[in-house]
Length: 357
Image 1 (tube, one colour):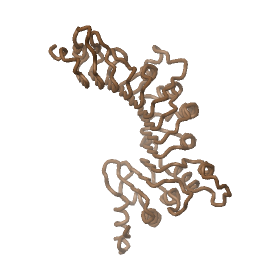
Image 2: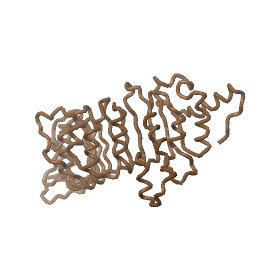
Image 3: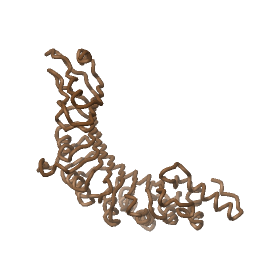
Image 4: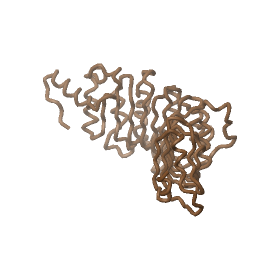
């Protein structure tokens, strides 16, 4: 192919083709050829063929593989800092962590344990000190259990996890957090089921967390009130404490002392009084730095304003907004300010002007 004659100029290569055609991108047969390839994206509707350049092994820093068999394509993983693998088997995800020592940002989707009986998992824990961002979407709970049992990520700052409606693997995740000793700043979980006590225990193991987003499986029909209750109980340190050491005072929060933002997709009514107490008083010096609480309500829950925000909740909501906090309630399928609508709605019913913030 004519394009192969210019392979020494390939810095970014993106191929979305049947596997047999991907195999045709070989570069030249010159033994002196070098590769400047830094970004590689391979996507095929099948898992046929293999990407391999003649006389040179590319050393990209960014790799994206979609529906490819891991390691069937000839790539040096030595310098890869960002990797995306879509439709991956569990053993392939762990193999990626083994062969790519410089990984900083990883996205793994549709991770399945289907091959577990054919490809045994590593017997030792894989440590990746440089990995800071992990976005992983499991197809089954077995894959989640196996993954967190086998990895150690001491520098991890952001963890996104999607369980495809399966149970959140809390016990392996707790073990993972303990042996990784990472200072996790952001945790986002979606399409998962959980036991309330287990989830609270998991969050308690994330004392450095600043941003939290939880979107449980809608089939659970669950709300955020258990979390709000614990946030409200620990909104400030004990005002009677005689401890003048700021670091030790921070420890007295016990539950998410660094939390700044909390987002929850709720299938049940929210206790708005708990929301007010979760923020704490804005003038209190020892309150956690929580500034943002957002709720999303799926269409199955949002039948009317009254179904998500009762009239009795308005005083608590108004107090939070007047304090300057960022409180929002939205429908999951539309960017609509339900709080503003509710305040206007109930003010009209009462024949009173809506409060001004």
